[in-house]
Image 1 (cartoon, rainbow, N blue to C red):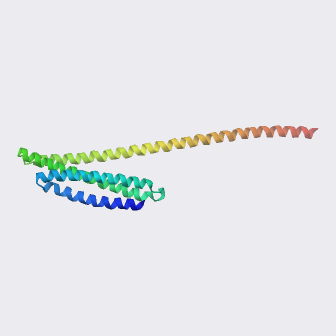
Image 2: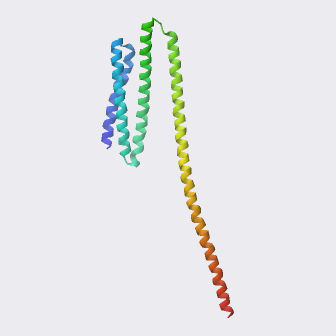
Image 3: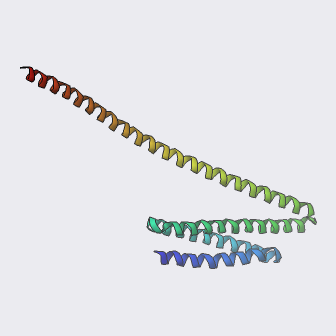
Length: 187
């Protein structure tokens, strides 16, 4: 089980290293090679996503007591994957800007600033979306916990009411017994 996971980890590490290397080379390549490199990186990113899915399936099959360590590793791999995708988007934007500049004969200074500003805003929006999603998850979990607590309290209330009813019956029976004994003593 964990040997499969470790094999996937090694494959993922090799693949991400290749992707990182190729992403850094994209802006410096001639246009024909850039197209091929972009297509190649896209395929490798898909392979990396599939590896992450396989690793995630392996983690789900691990016993709960040792799953935490693997879950933390998965989180870091997913973050790494997100960073790779962001870097790839940036290199593609740089690539598309270069193509546009070649076609239009534009020096691209203002578009560089706009692109950087757009990337910053996009990253900020993604972070906010992740925070909102995390907040929503916490709210859902809190609601589930609250619902479970209410069900437990309802069961406890029923138990207390049954115990109180038994106590009243016992008290009434004791009263009867006391009257009978008092009557017997008088006779």
